[in-house]
Every structure is written in structure tokens, then in C-alpha cells.
Length: 545
Image (cartoon, one colour):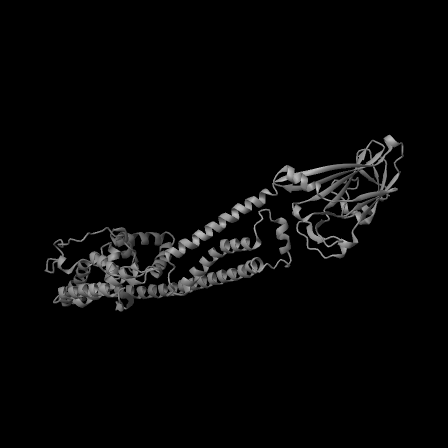
């Protein structure tokens, strides 16, 4: 167990254990002693501390909040020991006597404020691409006359690319390691440049006044344009920041609203088992995977909620700069949970789809009047009527795909549906018959056929009238699998058919008639079966009349 201290390094607060603090203190004291008598030593030391602060920040994660001795030793190895470098005046001409490893660094894009004409964009791009900034400026001028796109590009880059203000940033811009030697070298170059400028100030002033007096107007114009572009850049930067804040706020609202909706919509239904809510009672009837509704609710919540939590987190990072970063363990855990949840939903989704993959049917044919064998003459006119159940009609139903859960007269649960249709077809025989097609879906044809056979349906003939139940029922364990019943009433040619208005909802799509009348309008007229199997209207008024 080590003692932990809190330090302020380059205006950043760090927690560091006692051993690491002592090593860092010894190193900074050595650097300070090494820089004694060196021009700009205070600025060099400040930049060294700023660089160490940056390296410390890279070491910290959500799971690791304390700088340890190993971290300090690694940073010292990167920065280099003071005794590894020469401090004589030939520091720029000779190779430093360094035993530390020099690693190739990736350049970072910054605006160069030291060599800028306006915003330092071209100079910064030149450093990044290792080419003379003059070529970048010429390229911008060429595009300026090619449509003015370069102006917009320059302003946007001016607004979004940061300026290299610290020594470490300038070294990053040039692809150099931000160690003690390079920081000292960079700052000493700056002091030498200032010294040269001061030494030649009078000469240049006279020379500019005598020979280049006309350039003052150009310089003033350039400064004026620079101020304009700087102002425009700040405006664009502000607009971008506001737009970013708006996007962040929008992501927060979308993420939080979705998470709350999922919580109340899925957790309250699944975990609290609110099965009496409208529509929830259908879940066991359509669920082929036998997956409990509470488990499905959790899987849906995780599969949908985790991505929206990501949107919420991104929005918070945009709005709040001091938000604690999400650790790698947390990221991997959330992704793993999301991946497993989606995988389970896909697996059970495929299983659910397979339960509807095969269509099976059961065909039954009943002879109502068999004149060929009994010698009974088929009535000239047949009357068709629908018969509903007073019991089921009294109950309120919410249908799902034409099927609902209801209760019989004994209070037992049953599947109840009105998906019954009747089509009238012809025959040359002296007989009347009913062919019933019961159909349903299932995993296999055998399962689908058995489910179709389980449909309970009644119809009866009394004299010249045929009564059709307008519904069928089935056991709940048969599930909702697109069950329906289609019947064909087969009658001799020339038979007159009078359809009661109660049959309007039961008339099928295969009822052909010579008036091209809509199927639900057939009960309004009197029909006769033609020899071609087309119902001929006897009560319709022809257009000639």
C-alpha cells in the first residue's frame, strides 16, 4: 500500500503515489539544475512540465486514476535525462549524445502561427505534408480563380484546425519528439530569432522606410484582410460549436427518450407481467420459441437500448467537456452484451419465422343433396344465410391477423375468428355439395395440416336454406398461425341463388358474376348459375332498358 499525493502540474491535477512523486521531483530538479544559466530556462522548464502533463493524461484511464513509478520511468525515458544532451553553443550543429531511443512520430495538423501570412493554414499543411508552404498557397490561389472554393476551404480550416501555441504542439506539427533536447532547441531558436530581429531592427527600419515604403500599404491591407478572416473564422467556429452543441443536445434527447420508452414499454410489460394490456395477451399465441415475455423484453431492451445509450453518451461528451471517459472494459462489456442479445433475437426470430414457413390444409367435402343416387330433385332456388353466435358477438374482441382470444359458454379459452368465406361454383350433376378448405401454417406440412384439422366449424341445411356459421373456433395451444376456412358451394347449372345480406362479409373473391359486381354487393341481387360457372344477375336492370 503506497501513499498517494495530489499535484498540480502545468495547471492539471494528478494523483500520484509517493515513490513516483519522488522520482518526478528528482527529475524536474535535475532539469532545472541543467538549465541554470541557459537563456529561456523558465520557459523551457514550463514546456517540459506541460509535456509531462500531456503524457500523464495519456496514462490515465477510467480504471487507472493514479500515476505510478513505472509511468514516471517510462516518461523520463521518452523525455531523456538532462546529462544526455550538450548545452554548448553548437547544439544545433552537433548530434546530441543521447542514449534514448528516437521513435518516428506521426505529425499532427496545426496552424503555424510563426510563419503565417493570415491564419497559418497553408504553413501548417506544409509542415504536415513536408513541402514548402509556398506551393500550398499557390494551390489555394489557383482554386480561388477556379470557383472560389478555396476561400470556403481556407475559412473552414482556419476555424477548425487549432494553432500550435505550445512548444510541444510545434514539435508535434513538425513530427519531432517532444523531449527535453527538442524543447530546449526549439525555444533557443526562438530566442535567437528575437535577438537577430532586435539587432537588425534599426537597419531594417531605415531600409524599409527608404526602399520599401510602398509595402506599408500592402502590409496594412494584409493585416486588414487578416482581421476580417480572423473574425469570420471566429464566427464560423462559434457557429460550428453551437451546431455541435445542438447535435449533442439532440442526441441526448433521442437517447434518453428512447431509453425511457423502452423501460416503460418493455420492462413494465415483461418484468411486471402486465398481460392484461391490450395486445399483450396475444404474445403467447404467436410465440413459437416458447421464450418468456420477460426474457424477450430484456433482450429487446439491451439490443435497442445499448446503441441509444451510446448516442446519449456521445451527446453528453459533446455538451460536457469534463465528462469521465468510458473505460475499455466498459466498452467491451457493453458491446459483448449487445452482440449476445442481438444474436439471441436473431436466433429466436428465425425460429419464429420457421413456424409460419409451411402452409398445410385439410379438405372435406359434404354432399347436401345427392339427386343422382337418391333421385331427389335439387330445388330450383337455394337460400344462403349466415349464422352468428350470440355469445361471441356479445364479447368485446381485439383481433390480431383476424384471430382473437375469446371464451366459450363454459368459460374456457378458445381461438375465435371470422375468417370464413364462401364461393359459389357450378356442376353438371344433379347435386348440391360443400367442399371445405381448412388451412394453417406450421414448421412442417404435417404440423400445419393437423392445426388446420383442429378448426371447429358448423353449417347446416334446412329445406332450401343453407346456414353458414360466420366464425370458427380452435384450441389455444394451436397458436395463431394464419388459420382460415374457405368453402365452395357447388350447385347445378340453372339453380337460382338468393343470398341474405348477412352473407355480405362471407362472400369470397372467387364468386364470378356477369356484372363484375363487388363480392360484398352480391346479396343485394338475385342470381342464377350459368353453364360457364358465372353467376347471372336476374334482378339487375340492364343499361338498354
